[in-house]
Image 1 (spheres, rainbow, N blue to C red):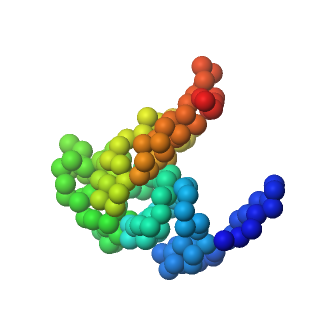
Image 2 (cartoon, rainbow, N blue to C red):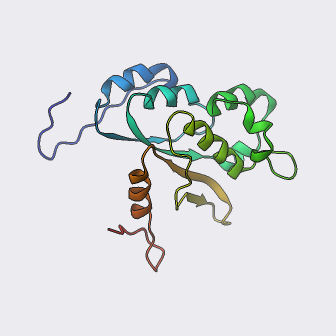
Amino acid sequence: MFPMEAGAVRHLVIPGDCNAKIDEVIKCLPRYGITFAFIDPTNWQISFDTIRRLTETRRVDLLVSFFGPSMKRVAKLDQPLVDAFFGTNAWQTDPRFLGPDGRPTLSGLLACYREQLAGIGYLNQISAREIAVTNSKNVPMYLMAFFSKNTMGYTFWNRITTKDEKGQMALDW
């Protein structure tokens, strides 16, 4: 696609709404090989249909940020956006995704998303490590969850997210 010189760094910024620009993004991706996508919405900006289109003809491993506090406080006005993000409204009605109080839990929302991804070829598997980012009071602010269509993706993820005895991230090869 693009010839690469030794040591060259290639990047491309495509400004705009990712849902509207997905065809442009797809054209820039290699057709074969493995692609890694970091999906970092600050709210509900990316629809599940966009993820489906990004991954339907490629092997794309995903690292997705889930912002716990905003996900657990969904306003009625946000529900269509949240439904589009998950590709379903089951996040708000399915007892498997709800806590004892009948409201969605962060683990339930992750399970819902994982189940939706399984419907488009991803493994319905929880990685050994989901990275929780906490605030100064140790309250989880967001979680970074990994998803792959291949068990080797989970093997790589689990190796690169291993912590040593001092709590530092370490490559475990």
